Length: 106
Length: 228
Length: 95
Image 1 (cartoon, rainbow over the protein chains, first blue to last red):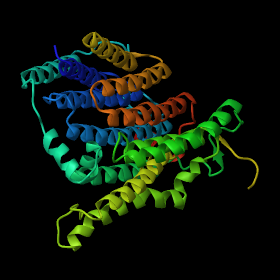
Image 2: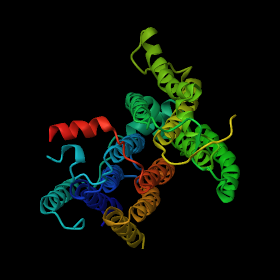
Image 3: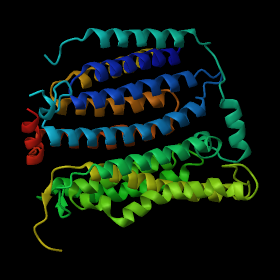
């Protein structure tokens, strides 16, 4: 089994773990971490597929794309977290399955 | 309660894993991709680090849009600040000796590392993104030691540095159009110096952006009592 | 031997990824995620992309970790939610 396959399949697994966390976990922080892990998994698949070159030198185009993606991911995380903090400040909730008090149907 | 397995997301995750991994296994075991063209192209413009050449030159459009995304995210985070927090706030009210000494010792090294990463970016691993990240992390460390106040996120110098990266990139990419060529088509004789200056500016801008993302959203800390 | 290292590294990454999204303690989650970033940069080196490894080590482990820890601290500090009497009145009027 060649190196790239180990990382490509592992990346797919990490991506699906992140997807599950993003969909199923209720806490905002777990969702944000899950989104980050999804991104990391996809980056891993991309770079692993770029390693299939005959001479073993990783394709620079996926590398540049992933480098771009990492910076965009940190922007996503910061924006998501500041929205989450604002939500917490306004409602006192950190669990997205609960309705905030203002719309609990009273 | 929180640890209950949910069926639908689990099925979705397993299906995604199956789809992605079977696609990956179906692909040919060997594929040159674009690496030959890129390595040849980078050699033609005398940039030894192919990734830097791809980022700033061959796929400069991606990087331009990425810097815009970073700017927009920073603006959005700045606009979500808690308005109740004062301007005299520091993240560490009490002077934590170990943190302060660490900050004093490590931050100059981080600045040198950032400069080094920009400088070697065209020949070895390194470049604007890595250097900007190191610079931003150094700034965050200074913020944690209390040297940099969260209100700096609104300071006009930081804002200027933040926006100058995008503006410089736009200027550099539009100039070839004025000279009758296409977007991002740098002329060969100016290429090196233009790319080095652009990378330096982008480093500062990305660093400022990382720092502002942290400062604008940072909570906690204590107000400074003394007037300064 | 190298394949064994790769399998171990990927297995470790998967394990840390599961751990960091399933911990009840948020602080543990964040620490595990930071560790995930560090091991991920090791994986980038194994995949022959040192540029990405440098960025991942500085951003994935450094800046993102700081942002996440700050958010955990914020949610733990029991900040007073906006009392906003206006919204309370509106809520009462709706009821």
